[in-house]
Structure formats: structure tokens, C-alpha cells
Image (tube, rainbow, N blue to C red; front, top):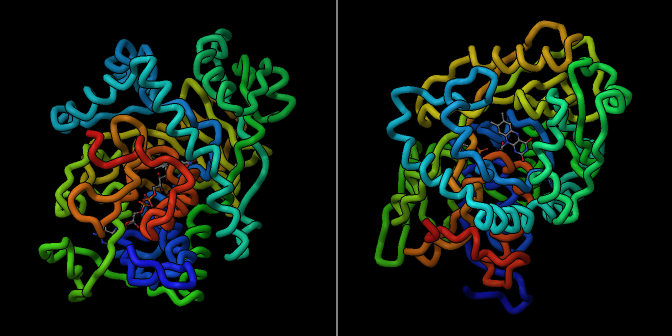
Length: 420
Ligand SMILES: Cc1cc2nc3c(=O)[nH]c(=O)nc-3n(C[C@H](O)[C@H](O)[C@H](O)COP(=O)(O)OP(=O)(O)OC[C@H]3O[C@@H](n4cnc5c(N)ncnc54)[C@H](O)[C@@H]3O)c2cc1C
């Protein structure tokens, strides 16, 4: 990598995907001095980044695959209460992914994954604050904490390992009984027997607007935003030389693949075959829900999340494995709502909109952030599963540093592409 005498990097970088990860990467590349083109077939943030639950989750350290999962998973695949929905036809195709996922539930591995997740999640604001300040987006961040609620009397005890895993890594956790939880959130049902409050978890009040504000700032700073679908790349001896889109083609120098759940095909063209699955989630938006909540609420047994957004209450959940190109099944959004109404019975109001989008998920609950093993001018930034909003800012910072040839703020070894 060549750096200019002033210390700022020069050259051109093309970032594919204007979700939260690609947009933050584009902004940090600009800050490093690169000329940057950000390309997305839709508007910025319109993939998974638009519909998430808004949580800047320092507490999301436990990976998806935890000790004991191997015994629970078969039941989860059939129990309508759980968030897991596996399409029967797709089950066979996703089996290798699930085998790897379960293999990662060994305690020693879980601890290593938790460290690597924490290395990103403990730096949420290190990544975001400069971007939020630059874009003037502070009004989108609510510092209100997150409440995990339990219906089972032994819920907290059963979560002891996951809670302790967070505490050991510096996350503040306040355990409370059902009455204390209802004092905090009066809308909670009497069936709630206990809760864990995470005061350090903050909320983005409109994740789509956050990406849009960032993208506008990127353009104001001289970045090029293209609304084109990338079909592939012409590959020369040194790697990609031209990007082919539905609108024609563009010469490329350095390339960052940040296309969320759609990254696999593009990564394949770059010589990698990451085991990336689309883990589809759903939400309902209710403008007039008849309740007011002061913190984001997650039901530990029903895996639904209630978040007060700037434009209404968002009720989200579900992890559906049915392939990236399957049609959404909005009955699953209804299931999310039914479960939320058990936790917060006074939740009413008409659903204004339903949404579905794919989390980009790898079986070890860690993203790929790093250079392509094959082409030195290609970089990967995808696979952030349930924490892409939280980790988007710091991922962008790391990509900026990496492409500029500078030491990275976090050791990137756990996120390398060739670990699979
Ligand atoms: C219901 C739900 C709740 C969630 N809650 C949270 C939460 O509370 N906190 C949290 O941290 N995370 C949460 N997540 C996860 C988070 O939303 C994702 O991890 C994150 O949005 C991924 O961002 P991304 O930029 O990698 O992908 P995306 O936002 O999906 O962006 C990828 C972009 O690439 C573009 N693209 C793809 N292929 C091409 C192509 N060939 N050409 C051009 N453009 C292309 C797409 O149009 C898209 O805009 C949630 C997810 C869901 C579904």
C-alpha cells in the first residue's frame, strides 16, 4: 500500500454494499484519504440494516451457539415458541452450517468467540462516535439500556453462564425480580418472574435513517454513491480490474465486499467460499401501540425484542433458514407479535408495516473482516449476524486502517477469511 507524504492514503476504493457495514467502511476509507465509490443496487441501508432492532449491544457477547445447544436444537426446530424456523426443504442444504454451528458450542471455543465478539462490541462508540459527530446524528441514539425478561422462575439461574460471561468482560448487569422489572417497565405482564438489565446497551432510534445520514455525509465529503447492482468482476492477474453492473462497468483498484448476506457470490469470485447463511428476521411496526416503554425489552424465552423507535414501536424476532432467495413468510411476523403480546399484554394497535431481511450469519458467530486470501487488493467485511448494527462502526474503522496499510485497532486474526 502506498501512502501519500502527508500520511493520508491515496488511490481509489470501491465498496460493494451500502448497508451499515459498507457505509461505515466507506466513511472511514474517506477519513484515511482514499477516493471512495460506494455501490448498492438499492438505497443506502435498505438491506438488513433498515429493519433491525436498533440495539447497540455491548451485552451481545454470547455467541449463537452456546454449551448445551446440541440437546436443545432439535426441539427448537419444531417448537413454535422459539425463534428458529427452518424450511424443511432447505434443512438438508443448511445442515453443514448447523453442524459447524453446533461444533462451536464447546465451552473453550465459546470463550474464544466471546472474546472476539467483545473486542468489537466493547468498541461500539470508538467506531461510531466520530461518524455520528460528523453526520450530526446524535439525536438518533437513545441511552436507555436493555432489559432481558424471564417467564421462568429459574430463568436467571439458567442464564447464569451467559450473564457471567458478560460480567467477566466488563459488562454491567443488574439482576432483578419480576416486581422490580415491572417497576421499571409497568407494561410487563405478571408472568415475568425475573429480569437482567444492561444499562450500557444503547439504541438507534431509526437504523435506516442512521445509514442514510451517514451516506449523505459520505456524498457531502466528495464520495461517489452509485445505485447499481453488481453482477461480478473482470479478474486480471492481480485480481479484479473491472466491476460489471446492471448499468455497465467501472474500472476498480481496491475493492471491499460488504454486501451482507449477499456477499457469498461475490466472495466466491474472489476465490473464497465462506459458509455464509441468510438468517432471515422479521419485524412489525406499530405507530400507536397503546404502551410506552422506556427501555428496549427482550423476552428471553420467546426471543422477541420490543424497541421504541422514533416512528413507532418495533417488534422483532425470528431466525428463519430458508435460503437467501426464498420469499418471506409474514406469518412468522405474526408469530413474533403474538409472543410479544404475552410479554406485554396491553400491546395493541394496528400493525402499520411488516418487514423481513436477512442477517448475514457465519457458523462461528464472528464476521469476516480482513483481506481476501487470494487477491491483495480485495477486502471482506461481512457476516455480522445479530450484531451488525452494533459492530458496523468499528468494522468500518478497521477496514479503513487495513486498506490504508496501518496497524489495526483490533487484532484481526479471529475474523480472517481463511479460518473455515
Ligand atoms: C430482525 C432483525 C433484528 C436485528 N437486530 C439487531 C440489533 O438490534 N443490533 C444489531 O447490532 N444487529 C441487529 N441485527 C443484525 C443487523 O441488522 C445486520 O447484522 C446488519 O444490518 C448487517 O449489515 P450489512 O451492512 O452487513 O448488510 P445489509 O444491511 O444487508 O447491507 C448489504 C447491502 O448490500 C447490497 N447488495 C447486496 N448485493 C449487492 C450487489 N450484487 N450489488 C449491489 N449491492 C448489493 C444490498 O442491497 C444491501 O443494501 C438484526 C437483524 C434482523 C434481521
